[in-house]
Image (tube, rainbow, N blue to C red; front, top):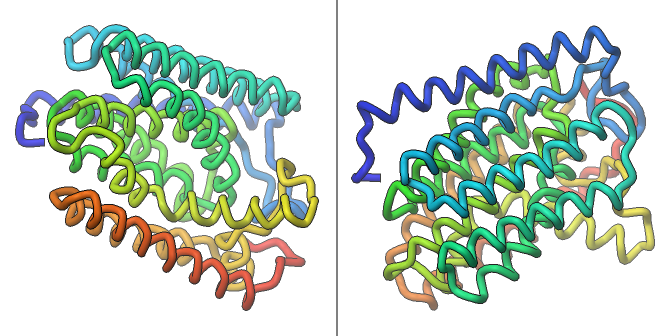
Length: 340
């Protein structure tokens, strides 16, 4: 991030954060007026009816940041357009679903279309051929991981903010650093509405856009090229999002093996079990934050090493994360009550 002109960038980031905060405030008023509330239940981790859809502020703020980056020449035009199109596709599907139930197939179609838009933008920007199909698959995966893991106060937003900051630290140029900083700023603008106690939830419009935005940022880091580019960067990129990927993969994998309806709402994730067992969301969100900070430090250390060291770092993180997940799910049963 040494090439960034902070005197110019900091006011711009403040505007992005203010846009996200304003969007959350307006969304809360809209949700309360129209009764768009998530009700407590056996498949929920909250105890009081709470407005949803506040993540639309993040979606609008980050889309505007991408447009500004494209106009300023930081992002190549095709990639800026792809990012905005993806936000519109994922965000629109989430916005509709926040207002009335939308078929999961229509949501998936929007997520895949967003991945296709990103893949097309990468091809137009001259990315390596292997990156386009990875983006096509990675976008809907990350969208749904962030949706599944958005279940307690502050968790999805803090994890996205930390991952975005990590990607900014790993960036070699403003190409990836500025959009990453913009996403972190948008998350910080929304966070006071969602943590330590939620006054409004992200909703599908917010959680989905966070997952898509992180996919875009990871693709931009690979696109930067240089000594860090290529498939060898993927183990490093795994580390800042490892908490969510490990919890989601193991939990959903178990549900699939047990032939459960894995795509439906549930409280089987490790973070949900912890929140119910402890009786509070705050320490769980903090614990996941500590894990991610440690993973970011490991990513920065491994970044300057060879492929073997990077693979060892990612593998060690995955193994420790899987062990932690196993311990949590073994000692904390599925919650049979709501936690505050």
